[in-house]
Length: 235
Image (cartoon, rainbow, N blue to C red; front, side):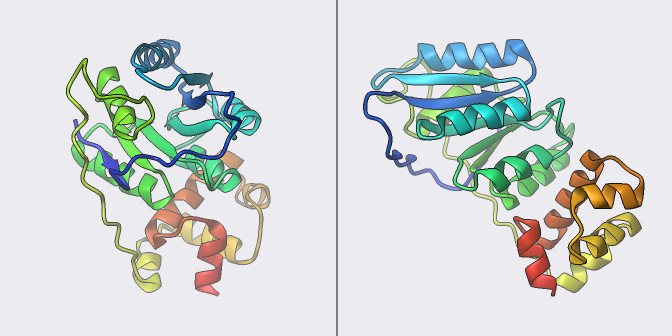
């Protein structure tokens, strides 16, 4: 198993109600996966109590986070949710809650190259770390322990090895434009005109979810983290 993260340092504790335990939000539409991660997290807390919250889709995850953001220190986010496409779920979460620490869990890429590309895209868009779903549940919990969220030492299984960081080079605007498809160029032009996803969907006669997917691909090509950053750099 391989993983990508931004730092091996423990996550600093956020200011919160001292009477309430810290929390982790697990977002996955597969009940067994979600329940398995939650059960292992709760079973491996060795010091400070930690609350494990669950969500089965992006809309529910955003609602849970907004109600508990003072306590949630880490979000485990599956990319393949019923109401997301590709990296759109990560983009939406980051746009609403830029301070959220999000660990992406994904089984979307079927090859090593596909996983690496997806990992780079997730990190470019601001994910705290990327874990492939080929990882066992215990390896996921070990990674969370390495972040300093479960307290104590890893005594039940080896500590998760420190993953290597991905250095995502930011491409030049001209090179990035040449790599875009005709449809992506069309969407980019509409973005630069200030049109919303809904307006672009109507103009292109596609769904708004598909537009978000195109925007995610464009941001990845330009090495940008938000549409505002993209528009600012190209104007």
